[in-house]
Length: 257
Image 1 (cartoon, rainbow, N blue to C red):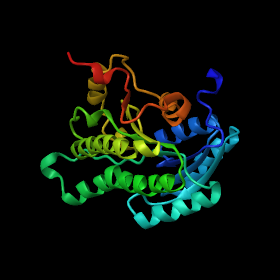
Image 2: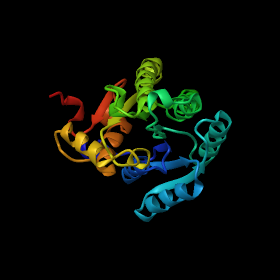
Image 3: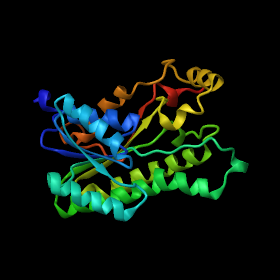
Image 4: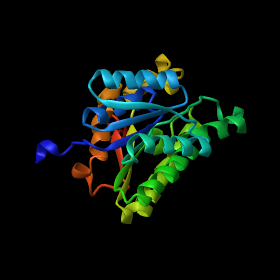
């Protein structure tokens, strides 16, 4: 029935970077549709605050601590989540790190740091959680959070743009790799949502430029990412959708002159 199209009851969702502004909102959306949500972050206090908020709204969630760039840490948290809920049906990758360092001033230490969080970390989570999905013969959904800078590089965020372009490629490669096992892999391309990693570069001039290139002439709100996340998580709603890059950007990607 159409009323059950987005029902995630009984599913376990793992949200990496679930203590961020955007990650926590999408996690809340998954919980509101019945999923048990494992919120994974480095800062356990922030992670627990997200869990407490979800539980206060009647949802099911538990906080877990892990470092997305550490395979050992992710393997440990996978074991802990499996002990809690038996496995993973939905993996939402929402870690993110940004920098406005000009290209000629960029040191490789900073390049490596951003690439490790935005790209390597997601490759690691997919290796670990998708492998267990396959071993447990679970069909599932992997949702990667990309960026508008992944398709048209943005000024002042060179490394971030490159990392997100790589993430799009990872998404489409793994969609082909996992299709026969019933695991769908897609990415959400958010437009401009003021969050931790971009607030520091949102000058008045840059905001004006963003609005000029966004037909809806406003920023997005974190809640406006929930629908895309729930849709991609639901096998009933998007069971034949894989390898796609879903824009939630107020029209930014369709703007030329």
